[in-house]
Every structure is written in structure tokens, then in C-alpha cells.
Length: 249
Image (cartoon, rainbow, N blue to C red):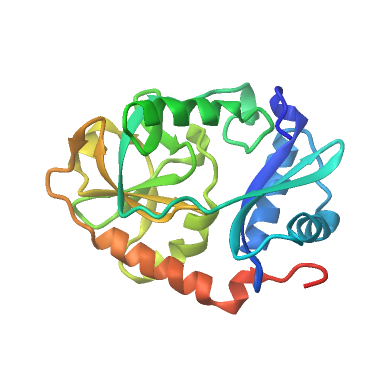
């Protein structure tokens, strides 16, 4: 269960498949250790696979599973994958901020996410871009990446307060080999205005293009980044090496 104080727990959300196990488990484990240290928690990774297996033993198909570590041990809850979308309309909202190193972690005080989702949906938007100090630092359930006029992909610096993206980390080397290097920098108004596309990367979403931000579209839009990213994510998830079978599978 989610708590009311951020240091009460650390979590990650994984892609689960009944035939293959969970995707990108080493990346999730590494993030759990990093975020746990920032939250003064020490998640027991040795028992994670068993907890995931126990929590998902009656599930079928593909699901998203949230694994939360707290003083009570692991709690695993699952939900359906996000509905498939060709593109989304986004609004900007103020990014939540916490003390010190807590900002940018997957922590227990995650109720803000539902509040932001409700605010976006009340305006007919599908995505909520989180803004701090006049620049986009994250999206409530994914990582926003801009494609500029030179073919360079731009993602916010993690030091700006966004959550490290497992999906982007997994395919960034493939993007670079495909001619789309990923750089870190300010996603400010000027860079957004000069960009030709924004793609959201997420465990549940995969890759989804953004059609508009606060009602404004891109001047010279292109789907090339979305097409390449979708292909690369599909290839990544088709590879047996992406998946870790769980205890008892």
C-alpha cells in the first residue's frame, strides 16, 4: 500500500508476462537500490523474485505489477496495461517537489499521481507534463523525449527531478545506433518550440507520440522518432534476454 510519507517505501512498476516472467529486471533492481538509498531504505532484492511470483501466480496475459518495499517487506499489486494510443494531447502542470534527494525517486507518497491524472483528464488531456523552473522535467507515468531539427533526442537531466526511465535506458543505445543520439538538457519553452516531435517512453505506454502541449501542436511535426522507437521497443521485448523467469515458473 502507498503511504503518506515518501520515506515509508520505495517501488518500481514492471512489465509482467505469464509465459516469460518480468522485463528488464536488472534495471529495475538497480533503480530500487539507488532510490532506496536516497530514501534511507534497503530493499531486500534477494526476496523480490519470490514476492513477484507469489503476487502474480493467479494472473494471466500481460500485466503491470508494482513492487513496493517497506518495513513490512514486499507488496505486489497488478493492473492492466495502459490502453493503446496512437498519440496523446498533453497539458503542463507544476512538478511535485520533495526535500533533497527524495525528489526523483519512486517513493511511498505517490497520491499526487492520481490527482494530476484527474486534472489532466478533466481537461480532455491524456498526459501531464511536469514543469519546474520553466522547463519540463518529467511526465506523470513516462519519460518525455524531444526530437529537435537536427535529429537529436533530448531528455531532461535526472538532476532536474525526473524519475529515471527504465524504458528509455533499455533502448537508448539502439536509438543511437539508429541515428538518434539521446542527450540530456533543458526541455525549456525554446527547445520545445524548435522541436519537431515529442515521444513519451514508459513501461505501460511503450512509446506514444504527443500531438499537442497545452493546445499547441508542433510546427513541422514528424512521426519518425515514434516509428523508430516503437520498432526498437518491440524488438527489445521480443528478445528472450529481456525477460527474467520468476521462482516456480
